[in-house]
Image (tube, rainbow, N blue to C red; front, side, top):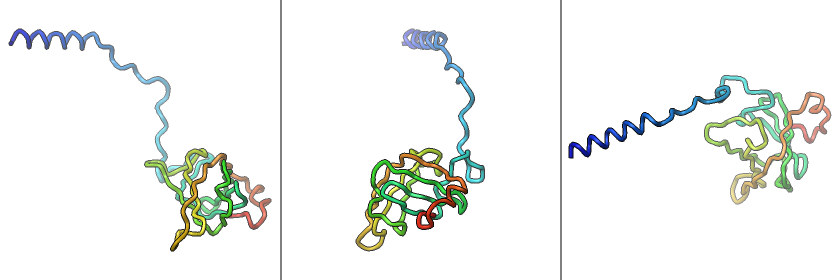
Length: 147
């Protein structure tokens, strides 16, 4: 029994000596996730900073972020058909990610008819594009479309 145990330990040691160590990671280290008090990259915003929204048409939603920036969100389908600006947005955040830099970062639904008694099943929207508007572009929007 001692001989078998000694042989097994010897074989394990020999295999460990032959094994290659993990290669060092290549390239720069990944960027850290932005903390709540750190500024985000240009064009990104925290989803909890969305203050207001306006439905412009079946495919276009304007949102105001942090009471200063306005973004135009173009939807892949007509999820906004028959929705109004008074219908609440339902925004789901993936675990650990509370900001949006690309359209895929946004999980938006609109609750047509409100979320109160008897209505408002959220209709999911697929965001096709997300564009931050310049102050001149915001000023050029019709008043009914400004969030």
